[in-house]
Image: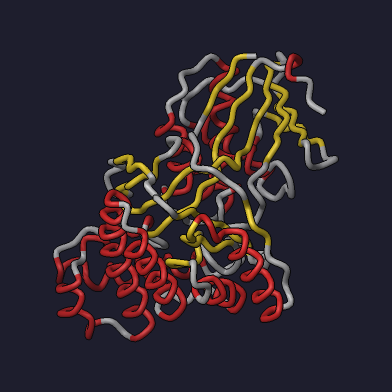
Length: 374
């Protein structure tokens, strides 16, 4: 049990769900995530040493990080994300002070809801607070992304860390990953609700084919850059793709086709959300899952079984995988009056198809970083 009065600050950063726009953030595309009330909370106090002492509410482990030699902690089972975050904060020229941190994470690990981003963002925000530095959410997101790439080894885009840091209660974010321009879009669901379900197949993006997909889109860009006059794949229009598709061999062509069409779906989805048109939004989610399954090949039998079960329920307007894939969660748009029946139906159907028991999460759309002086 944490005695909050023993600490100076209570800092939170959010997990996130991506409504639509998958695997296009690192291609410079616009994405449509929302921060969740599932969070990583950090209780922190300065300790006057050159050590960052870590403990967790959910683990018996205790780890002490030497602030003068943070690179040595890359292979830690627990504490590596915090070490990477502290290193990037330090390398950015900010003041890094020794402190005691307790971390309490309610974002399920390996769920595709960005537990790693929530940990990185909240850790950096906590280091800023205890050092008396300004809390700058966008800058913190960029440093957290750097930690994920350079320390954890996942060549990710900016979406997860940006959503975790900059989320706004009741709003989705239309985030341009090329320029970092962000427009907040009120989530107007009317008679519908968002339902998040975890397929409970463990996944690890470093060991998965996430980095491979990133390399494939990079190859597609390399081939098309000069021909199409683009600086990132997200700039490629559907018409341009149709003209250039024959220059790409099968696998690369499929990956690029997904990126181009997913970018278009994001544009249509944010318009549907603004209009409260959940049926159109649901259809776009279904199309996104089909593309991620057959063109981008990042779903797998468990996520496909979960999405198929959801889509077959009469109260479901649409469902798709969310996150990096290879395990994790689906997001579904479901008539609020039928949510409980929907959950029961999907869980039974999914377990029958795969042998796994899925988990439903009750989460609201929430703020990103919060800072409380205790």
